[in-house]
Length: 141
Image (cartoon, rainbow, N blue to C red; front, side, top):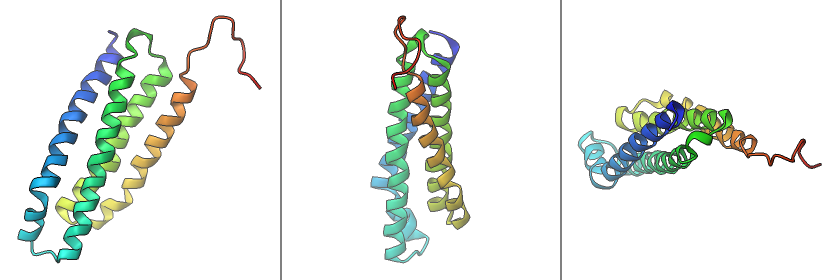
């Protein structure tokens, strides 16, 4: 396994573990924490939904990282770049939602779309990662 794929595998494992942990926290402890801060029930429900959205996208992209790592030594630079962008998206999108909810810092919401853009670009880069057959010289028109 080359260093880039090793990094993607470690990143996928850490992202998966943290995603599951944060999802469990959202399901079993977040509401109580927000209630203890004296937030209104409607705001609590909104914050729990935001946190769960972060967790859901976090886990989806942890699995995407794992799939990229599975390419092993055959990974193209497009796949590696896509993996780095998936990781950046987890930090920016999900991380900003977690911080927004836990710290009640509304400006964190302005960072969230940057993570979404990172994910969109990562998925587009995967289109360029498709291997060519040896007899292919140019893409079909």
